[in-house]
Amino acid sequence: MKERIKRVNVVTMGCSKNLVDSEVLLNQLERGNWTVAHDSGESGFDAVIINTCGFIHDAKQESIDMILSWADAKARGDVGKLYVMGCLSERYKTELEQEIPEVDRYFGKFDLKAVAGELKVALQPEFIYERKITTPSHYAYLKVSEGCNRFCGFCAIPMMTGRHVSRSVEELVKETRFLASRGVKELLLIAQDLSYYGHDLYGESRLAQLTGKIAEVEGIEWIRLHYFYPSRFPFDILPVMRANPKVLRYMDLPLQHISDPVLSAMKRRISRDETEALLRRIRTEVPGVVIRTTLLVGYPGETDADFEELLTFVEEQRFDRLGVFPYSHEEGTFAFENLVDDVPEKVKQERVARLMELQEGISAELNEDKVGMKLRVIIDREEGEFYIGRTRFDSPEVDGEVFVKPERKLLPGEFAEVRITGADIHDLYGRLVTGRDEHF
Image (cartoon, rainbow, N blue to C red; front, side):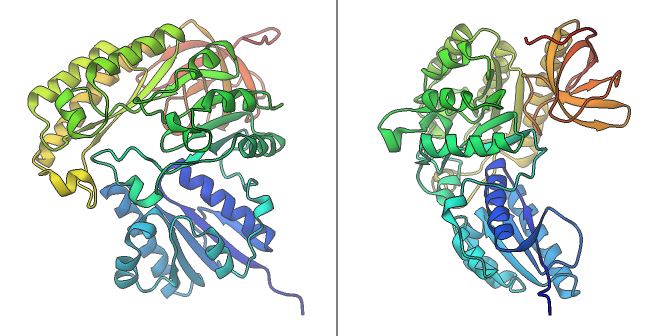
């Protein structure tokens, strides 16, 4: 008799770094003769693997809710085996085994070989750089390192990922060639700490060299850099960003705060003066650079004066993109062990709302300034009456989009020249520029 085809569904929670891990696993399982799906809500799978997030309370709860949902599906007989891996499982494996015993087996974040072995698949290291791309095929994430050496006061990531481990330039270029061969045009470099890339392997930053090598790969047209740490910033990336048109003038630079007492309590190893000098240098050396940042409010000891200082800083800096999060008191962190979570939750949420209201006004003004511009847009999808894409200012999932009227057929991954005709707080609206397309 012919062997029945086995089906597995990998469900990814949390960040893009987790997504890359899931894509590597999906490829290995497919090579092992499993039929694979990603984030499917269907029943009938022989196995479901949940790749969890354990960063902050809300993310942990979402992962737990997902585990419980699939545990219910297993109890109904809708799926076969249920496995859990990833950051939450790395951090709370013993507790999860006790609280949710319906799961057949829990794995840590780096147990790829064990996960594959559980499904009777022998890991093939020679194909570890290949991935089953789950994003739209024209863009993909490239994880250049894992782990973090910074140990910020609020952050639990080092407990789950360990210390910083860079991948070699050669390995990453090889993976980039594979992604380009699958139609990827936009590459998003990610890490817990992009600024530290290379120090552990080469004794110095190699981000500029890596980015230049990746830019040489045929087919890659946009390279976007995510998650710089402001301390020990790799300044040699700035000339590359300025000179190489493939390296977008876009920088994701989480600052978290600006008040010196809060920065010190957060163990960020940078001052307000140093932060402002960094921003000035980036904007001077890379004219027109788009800076995205994230801020954390309600950290233990944050006073009204600290928060007002942060508000003024955001108003002065006029960041292109900004996210704000309330502090979460995470066990095992420096803050949990040494500081009192003394800012009431109501105050945290009020501070989030005030910052976001300020940023929405800034974003609306910056978007309005783009009306009349001719911008290069990468098309992501067709939706309703519009083609929807992004400019160099916009990273997928986290930033705004461009709604383009369908004056001719456009395909996902196609670059189009668009005249911006309207704007709101988050998004832009435009029409195709008529005539022969130009490179710009």
